Length: 216
Length: 216
Image 1 (cartoon, each protein chain N blue to C red):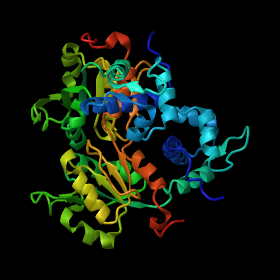
Image 2: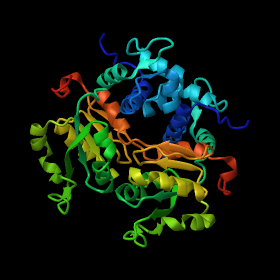
Image 3: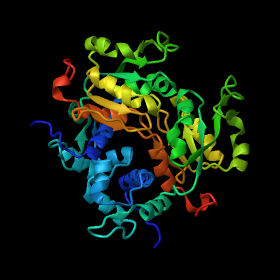
Image 4: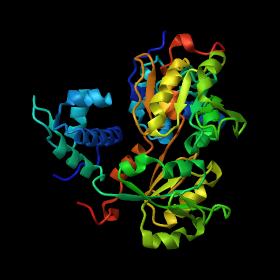
């Protein structure tokens, strides 16, 4: 059965969570999980779990739950998390350095292949084991490296020229941490990360009694 | 009408996006937006927009769209983004420093009140205009400051003791950037940020022709 790539995006976001949950269950030696078990581990409603998985075929048996290993393998393949993906970071500031050292990157199957910056006081220095490269050299260097995933961790003002340079260098998907939107050709996918969005969601759930007194 | 706090969480996440979109529209001098306009600005389906807003009352007029200012004010109030919220960061490493300097924090109505660390080589130094405080002093200091939102930006191994200290100090909601889960009492809400989740979603959308050749 060909993989359905038209599933709604929130389903894809949850699929990534299922993959992580299944990987952890494997490590724990768990062999089967029901949708209720998955709900307990992820907080995602068991009906939603079943609906999400139904986009991609028949999994599990009624009353028996899902066999962890085959489901993990199938979902990882759908998400293309069954192989290492290389990424590059542009912006060797605090955010770029934090990401470069983020253990979750490697654990999720990503390999950081290069870090670029335009600041001559940074170029040539190292972050962990990677030399900071001159962004001007990206099209040439990436012709060999072939990285298709770019991560922007520059200030807002630099984000658009950086996105342009990534596109020129063959990048097809961009994760943008800069607090601004970037424009790209239609065949390049951009996801903007807003680090404050989760904080905004948390505020909604603050208990009334704890709200600031200067409330309107 | 009392505010409905039982709306599904994805609705709350989108509400935060609507608030941002409306704020920007105000700055641009736009006075009305249809749900189709909101779709064009956010990528969220116009039917979804109408459904999300319906949880919180009657907004807009058929054929006329939504008046930007009152909708903004109402949604901001629902999301408690109509007042400044103070937050504190624990972990004065790259991620903590990146967040402290993140312009989106202030733009979204958050004020960083304190940064803590347990490393004596950092305590007493400054990040921007804030002195890095000794985490041992948090319960005392926060009795005065009264911050209820804590952000964990430590390595995974430190996350649980930090969460415990936050709870002891009166924090009720925690945003956790450390790549691990933390346990808290039931009345403390934790949201875990996985910086790689967006990357995983992007992988799903990579064009087939660009996939690594070592695919299974």
